[in-house]
Image 1 (tube, rainbow, N blue to C red):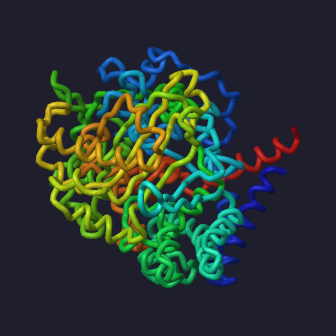
Image 2 (image 1 turned 90 degrees about the vertical axis):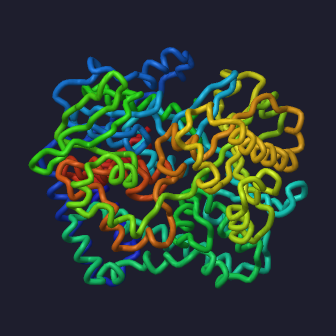
Image 3 (image 1 turned 90 degrees about the horizontal axis):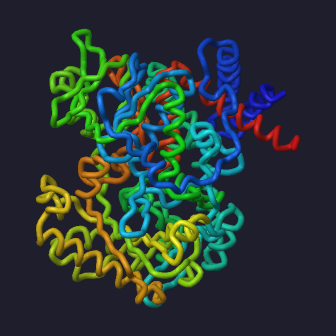
Length: 627
């Protein structure tokens, strides 16, 4: 019954999809039928063939126990024998790919250059405060949606998501001491009605805006499908122009600013329609409307945060990798991907001061991005042979992030903090203010208003926080700065970059903290701790080339069907695959999708692996009804 239900669900999805004609619908129906038959009677172990979840165990708070999982240092004796695959990088893309391969019976080694696993999902503890560095909220990990299903399976149900406030985001627009506050509410109708309540004269524009978001949400699946179809078929669809007959998705990649200006003349509403561009790091004048729409649709079910903090993600994925005989080792910087005389990738070289170590496997998966992989990890002659650098004519690294980590005295109740984020703008000219800020001399940065700030209160989102850190709270403040402000110190040792560097980052951090205290006056006298991270901090700890937190830039150039053919899991080098946020888009959910795409490609189950995920969702729905 469940098998028939998933087939029906696929049929219904096609009916609701952004198709261009009934003929395509018929072709799609027959295609799904064929895939279903191959999937049902195909060979090989499916990583999602059985539900692997079990009741969630109590939170592990003993840090020494957690460190044994998250901080396993590299040593030759810890490298498993007869590896099936090696994954470079332990972000959610790398760990997710490794876990899915492990669930298919593969022995996988994950190598991480930092001193703990997790990539942007790791946390750090200092002077009695714990901070996340990249996970601030996640959408669609509820209601048996794919994000929830995949997360559950690769953690065996041990990763628990806690729902944030109904008003998961708050926009603070204008003067920081007396801003206009506009909340974002979960639920399509609630979202629409809330905007109309704040902009009663703009009902037509708001209805059209919501309608376009819904259309893009349906059509956005094509962006993923182009990466899982056989390359010859995806190429045919793009080169022939049929892709534009099938979907209107690529017609929505015009600049966000132009679209909002066409919808309304109200500058504040234009700002609200663009407010969370910081979730992918591109200003509205260069951001594709489709990307903004996908992000807004992503949070229509609300925002969620991992119980116990962001490190819970890696903490519960790693045992799944270990169960299949694999390992996740840190302090293991990969300096080169090894290419054999036959042109195949066959291993990696780990740089150690005691001597480099070569490790061999028939499959190599890079989760550290196209920039790092093509520019730094592959031999130059291989790059030239396959013309790999050609891709950088179309894409470039995204913007760098500047983060302020603040420790506060007082509980969330005492400080009046909600489990929500705040997006603070000095005015409604988002492009003008931020472009001016980014173009100024770095010495003026700490003396002028920071026009954009994202504020998160992780301690208010986690129900276990008060038990783990009683009487304390945390705040993370983020903005964007040019990499060039910091570039001269990129080769200096961490914590040893000199007085000028420290003065610059402290001046900017203090300006951001003063603005935060205007938004939240109750925090002014509660400061106990402050640490600052710049783009070169990100470069050091998470290995990004120019301090970018979202990988390749998410501008309009990235979202073309032609580039979708280049940003795929397979590479021209046999045995080398890509995963992570460069494959789909930035963020937890897209990196998780990339993990499934890449694992499917390695296992030669590119389409059927998604059917397995959908079947688990249907089975879960049936089991829920039976309870």
